[in-house]
Length: 107
Image 1 (tube, one colour):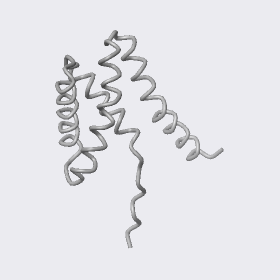
Image 2 (cartoon, rainbow, N blue to C red):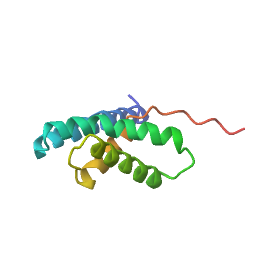
Image 3 (cartoon, helix red, strand yellow):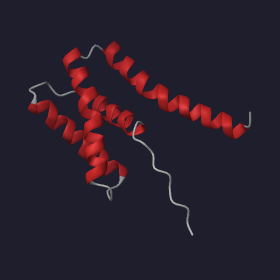
Image 4 (spheres, rainbow, N blue to C red):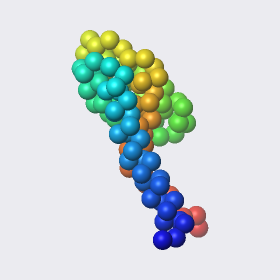
Protein backbone atom coordinates (compact mmCIF):
# COMPACT_ATOMS: atom_id res chain seq x y z
CA UNK A 1 0.00 0.00 0.00
CA UNK A 2 1.40 3.37 -0.99
CA UNK A 3 1.87 6.27 1.46
CA UNK A 4 -0.85 8.22 -0.36
CA UNK A 5 -3.31 5.39 0.24
CA UNK A 6 -2.41 5.31 3.94
CA UNK A 7 -2.97 9.04 4.21
CA UNK A 8 -6.35 8.67 2.52
CA UNK A 9 -7.34 5.89 4.94
CA UNK A 10 -6.28 7.95 7.95
CA UNK A 11 -8.29 10.96 6.76
CA UNK A 12 -11.35 8.80 6.16
CA UNK A 13 -11.06 7.38 9.67
CA UNK A 14 -10.78 10.88 11.11
CA UNK A 15 -13.85 12.09 9.21
CA UNK A 16 -15.87 9.05 10.26
CA UNK A 17 -14.63 8.96 13.85
CA UNK A 18 -15.03 12.68 14.64
CA UNK A 19 -18.86 12.79 14.58
CA UNK A 20 -19.03 9.51 16.51
CA UNK A 21 -16.66 10.84 19.18
CA UNK A 22 -18.70 14.04 19.36
CA UNK A 23 -21.96 12.16 19.94
CA UNK A 24 -20.33 10.00 22.62
CA UNK A 25 -18.93 13.12 24.29
CA UNK A 26 -22.39 14.69 24.34
CA UNK A 27 -23.82 11.60 26.00
CA UNK A 28 -21.07 11.44 28.61
CA UNK A 29 -21.32 15.16 29.40
CA UNK A 30 -24.86 14.65 30.61
CA UNK A 31 -26.67 16.90 28.19
CA UNK A 32 -30.37 16.08 28.55
CA UNK A 33 -31.67 13.72 25.90
CA UNK A 34 -34.17 16.21 24.41
CA UNK A 35 -31.44 18.80 23.92
CA UNK A 36 -29.02 16.21 22.56
CA UNK A 37 -31.58 14.99 20.01
CA UNK A 38 -32.51 18.54 19.05
CA UNK A 39 -28.86 19.46 18.51
CA UNK A 40 -28.32 16.37 16.38
CA UNK A 41 -31.20 17.54 14.19
CA UNK A 42 -30.68 21.29 14.22
CA UNK A 43 -26.91 21.46 13.57
CA UNK A 44 -26.86 19.54 10.24
CA UNK A 45 -30.00 21.36 9.10
CA UNK A 46 -28.46 24.75 9.87
CA UNK A 47 -25.19 23.82 8.14
CA UNK A 48 -26.98 22.68 4.97
CA UNK A 49 -29.18 25.79 4.96
CA UNK A 50 -26.27 28.20 5.39
CA UNK A 51 -24.15 26.34 2.85
CA UNK A 52 -26.91 26.67 0.25
CA UNK A 53 -27.89 30.26 1.00
CA UNK A 54 -24.52 31.86 1.74
CA UNK A 55 -22.00 30.33 -0.63
CA UNK A 56 -19.92 33.50 -0.93
CA UNK A 57 -19.35 33.99 2.81
CA UNK A 58 -16.20 32.87 4.59
CA UNK A 59 -16.11 29.81 6.84
CA UNK A 60 -16.22 31.73 10.15
CA UNK A 61 -19.16 33.83 8.93
CA UNK A 62 -21.04 30.72 7.88
CA UNK A 63 -20.35 29.13 11.25
CA UNK A 64 -21.73 32.16 13.10
CA UNK A 65 -24.89 32.08 10.99
CA UNK A 66 -25.29 28.35 11.60
CA UNK A 67 -24.82 28.83 15.35
CA UNK A 68 -27.45 31.59 15.35
CA UNK A 69 -29.81 29.33 13.41
CA UNK A 70 -29.35 26.52 15.96
CA UNK A 71 -29.98 28.94 18.85
CA UNK A 72 -33.12 30.21 17.11
CA UNK A 73 -34.34 26.63 16.63
CA UNK A 74 -33.81 25.84 20.32
CA UNK A 75 -35.78 28.94 21.25
CA UNK A 76 -38.57 28.03 18.81
CA UNK A 77 -39.12 24.65 20.48
CA UNK A 78 -38.70 26.14 23.96
CA UNK A 79 -35.58 24.21 24.90
CA UNK A 80 -32.85 25.79 27.01
CA UNK A 81 -29.88 26.86 24.89
CA UNK A 82 -26.69 24.84 24.98
CA UNK A 83 -23.24 26.34 25.63
CA UNK A 84 -21.69 27.91 22.54
CA UNK A 85 -18.78 25.46 22.66
CA UNK A 86 -21.15 22.51 22.32
CA UNK A 87 -23.05 24.09 19.44
CA UNK A 88 -19.76 25.04 17.77
CA UNK A 89 -18.51 21.45 17.89
CA UNK A 90 -21.82 20.16 16.53
CA UNK A 91 -21.60 22.64 13.64
CA UNK A 92 -18.03 21.57 12.88
CA UNK A 93 -19.03 17.89 12.95
CA UNK A 94 -21.95 18.61 10.59
CA UNK A 95 -19.63 20.47 8.20
CA UNK A 96 -17.37 17.41 8.04
CA UNK A 97 -20.33 15.34 6.92
CA UNK A 98 -21.16 17.65 4.01
CA UNK A 99 -20.62 16.03 0.64
CA UNK A 100 -17.51 17.37 -1.05
CA UNK A 101 -17.57 18.54 -4.63
CA UNK A 102 -14.32 18.05 -6.53
CA UNK A 103 -12.77 21.26 -7.77
CA UNK A 104 -12.76 21.88 -11.49
CA UNK A 105 -9.29 21.56 -12.97
CA UNK A 106 -7.88 24.87 -14.15
CA UNK A 107 -7.49 25.15 -17.87
